[in-house]
Image (cartoon, rainbow over all chains, first blue to last red; front, side, top):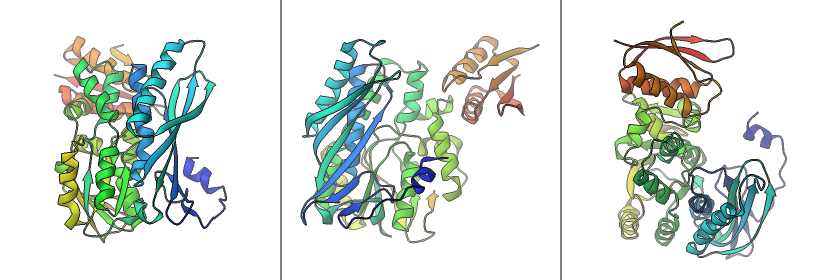
Length: 325
Length: 73
């Protein structure tokens, strides 16, 4: 039984101020406090994906903030969530993780207000982040409109590179580049995007570009066309994918998305692996009206986001389908 | 019995690493790889293509794993 099936067994109370709830597969929950302010709440934590505890802390925290940015919000407070094997790892490890997380919280302009830790056999770390957004300016998966262009703000391939890292195949420079990419907040991208005003947004994480684009296609009742040769990819990701360094999640994403894909001409398996690659702390996928796209791209380039590329378009038909060209 | 890599019970990317090591030692010929997930099977097929090995046989085992036979002339 997967999580969707389990959640379907539960009955959730409706509330007039619950603006974004659990039903729409969105990035965070949104609750209206006043006509001008809505609260955004999210939680994300995971097991280490890099060896250095300080870097792991930075990456996990950066990833947790992404959901607030993807909703068009401004983060205010953060709380640590820690599962720690106190008998096996020394306290300096935990201190380094929390230090990495704290630096990201400060970079995001938020404050740390506490947290909770439990003893666990496997180390896990992340944040619960609270932010605010104007209730009329919430960005969800459901706002994409035919004619929009799709812009991606980070290159794909972190799942593949992390697998190669686990296999001892990355050199120091590759490890460092991967770490910095995953520890780059989507703050700049979000600020540019909310200044200009866009139609929809999501952050690319575990479901990969294909999975998250599919969520937009379904929620917005549109078709999404992705131009695979336009998608920014981390250098070396193709090489490592060709060597079979592909995480299980990426294979599962491809399998899940296959029934919703319209592919022409036939997709090279490695391109499929990249498009479905499960990302950690990936970029924002933004659906923007064509007439605003230039301004958005210029703004992203000015703020030096890791990528700023038009990778696709939104069409009215066939609804709920991803076309790959 | 011929050359064999038993990668059952190992998580990604260990099956690929072990298979790659075997390719480097043998350079050519035939060997079998035992895996127990679709992910490992898919990843080894990517590796084989990249390294110029052919998967000449894929047998499904009773425990829903696979025995892959790889060959390079």
